[in-house]
Length: 323
Image (cartoon, one colour):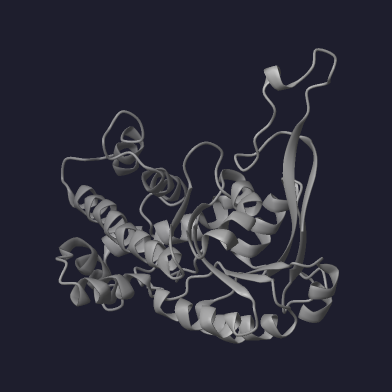
């Protein structure tokens, strides 16, 4: 359900121009607000719920952990949503299919399911087909922003039918960062997760470049202030980025990264990106090398991989191994 009330216009709604209003009419704009069911209230889902509520949307959240949940069951969540419903699933990839099937049991024709987790893009079309048999729409959304998204907004890469994406635009507008960037309707079902997969593959390469630079600086006989070097790069250089800011933050907390193990997980997207590079014969030297370096991290005591582990902890809240 979409509601309208006086407020500040979003990019999805056009407010009247001064010429459209009479002199005595008060200036009023409209914000489109929605109800949304949100399944999975962990690091990402819980913060998304709060960002959406701050924008005026009604979010009814469900999680297996009762203390996080707004309702006791998926059926109760569906009952509290007015038709046509929209339900966003934000759970680990390993349980996404099972969760979506359970959500669908509580929904009706005309409803929409959004998968915002890190699913493999090839899983999206079969899900869409299963849901379509019941008249339920499906949208896949690659979401980037980590534990900082509640404050800064989330970059959204979306795949699905135009009618479904358009209906969900008030939600996307509230989640994305302010301004012109941070959202793309990348294509049909599967395109959102495909774009997020490539995004994460690039992330692997960027993180590893910073990490190798860190290791070289740390081993240099000349450089005596490695954290200071990274801090100096945060303004005025072509290598400045949010990842660099986060590495600076990690070095402020632990200048030699002495408390971290170099063991670095990979969550799947890097492997899938390399798989696609092989399938399409795209040379992907940097991303492939960064992926293989993560495998190496599980064997050696590498300063570079400590830096990668620190970055993953900083932007995503991912678990790290302490010494």
